[in-house]
Image (cartoon, rainbow, N blue to C red; front, side, top):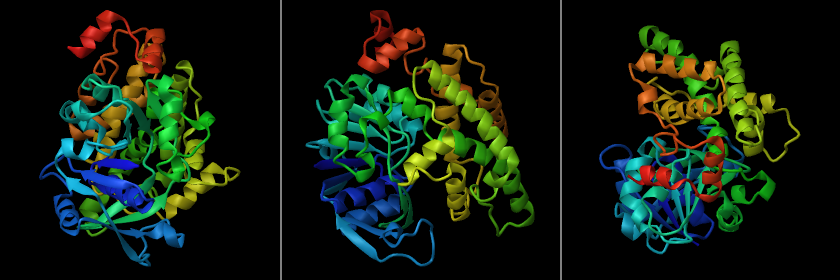
Length: 393
């Protein structure tokens, strides 16, 4: 297949390599300029492809010093031109921070063609923005996590730390799920899942995004550790998974936030899967293992950091994830005290109003819909005429 990867950061680079390695023809599009990974992008342009250290080939799941051999995959096109990158693609995979979806949708959705599969990873319901600016009829999909965990380690080279065993997708509108899965299942083994394991709709995927739980709670609990190291041990940095997520405070918060998330999912008619069980499903072939033990084994070998509280774990996953969760909870009449507390505390630390910045049903153009109209919209794209006119304005 012809695959266009949008986003030349950690996840986009790794998936570009993986897709090329699997025999797909891959184009890579960089949409930002002079923000991040410019040296990396220019190195790929010079090399006409990408180098990868795939530690999963040796059974490694950490950023260890005992790395696998570096290998190379050529790419068909490496560009900043969206029209050239998207032309002729069977599948478009978008790996950018969800905060940038509205602006990027306005720039590139006009190039989408009918029956192309456009996958947002992650999505947080952002496919609604791309649909708004698209005159044709592509199939939109949203992932809840990337197919791999990877880091750009030097210009032109990405290191893959682990690959997920499975990745659930949702589709917008949901009535195109079977059509979309027929394409997605050919991309990577992680997408070749049973239809019963596909998410019901894009809100199902958004709320099962693990980052909405583990990034927000983990970095909030890590905040005093970062402050302490900065003042007393400036050459050291704590590990979010190893240190912050080893505390009872973190797991108490996770349990409460996860319960609120599952209450919203239940009210939406979706299957409410606990955070740890969803992690086990994504990460392990053997689903008979204890989910907490599997998580503990991963966190011990996880990389250090983040190095600052002003990080996308907060600045993306709080306004795009938690604020969306709170907006859905408000629509459904569900109390969300833990969600609101975390939004307010993270915003207070950074002196930002994440409610004002965040993704809500209103910013998606769906604020006036009833529960039934909302579910009908994500199922079939149908909504009352007056709401559609307001969303398109």
